[in-house]
Length: 129
Length: 129
Length: 129
Length: 129
Image (tube, rainbow over all chains, first blue to last red; front, side):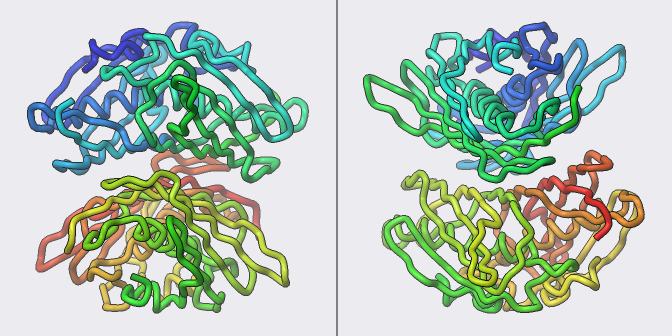
């Protein structure tokens, strides 16, 4: 799901670890990821939060099923400035038709890591494609 | 704000029109914008929805002020498949410190345009940088 | 669904009109609906927004099915002060398993009606009880 | 703020504990709190989640300031059936103008407590009334 998603690959988001109901990804911040004030664009954080949440949900689905985000909400907590983003997602409520997943995005800057955004996603589980 | 945001420019999102409390953008869908099932990635839609909302809010700020998204929520209503996305944002509630903006993302496919996602963003107005 | 929901009845929320994908409700504001600053409590507005959204969604379900709110988000746009609240909900995206509904809450004060909050709800359609 | 809010008092929500950036409340479930299927209405949970979040935020404000919810989002994770609700709120991001607070609502049923909903609220800090 990570290698197969062109948008995620094109941004440079890579899978770090994946387990039962959890997923972690990373991104090296480049100038192309920034908004007009030099911070990482909310859209980059939202993409990481959503896709990593989908990765966490996918670990709990039956074979032949896929996950589709119904909706997500993201709070941008601090301006994200630094050299690397990491995202950790965890399934808050598993389910055979619907899962709720939380994602936390951290920004690493000169050795310090800060929580920069937090998202909650509702993810539908649908039959095989 | 549009030309100055590297992430938005790198995705290919372009400003179509801007007025008092409203903003409209477009994007030609390319393979790099897709997720693993061939649909436009939620992160692309979220980026458009957020940035266009910021554009609409920025039209109502005093000189020397900037806009920062506090949070947004996006509902993905239909799988987005087609050749072009457009986004229309409108300020629902103006304010000197906080604005609430709605964004609708449409996908054009073979001459038909469908609403594929809708977002609501809370945007802070902050003093000059 | 309106008369059968004790919480909604106990608050004094009443059905005004209902049609295909739409629903409208009203509430006479009483001292018991207020928060500590004399405004209508966000919880009252959220209850109206959620329940009226459910009413709108229920008009589009097959017989024997029920609706359950998965999540909703509400933006409180203005302090709600006045003698009456009304809520209008409209299905933004119908579906056999999931619907997305928008609710607008208005507050009437001395003959003037203002939009005080807006919500978006994701509502699941589930088989007969 | 708890005793002074008529709506919260009228529902029977009571303060259990409050500390720096945290707040906890309880509610004995009564028939009047239910929706049409016998579960605790989402509006009751939303009211608890919002008000308890406000309580947590209020512990971190300067004297003479008040808190106002800008928006919140709540995910209803499970049908809430039981004899008691409890809500724990925690400030995720403090701030002098804006705070982000998370609330978890648990339902106790025959000695077992389950997480039934989770909310995230953006709360504005405004000058003295």
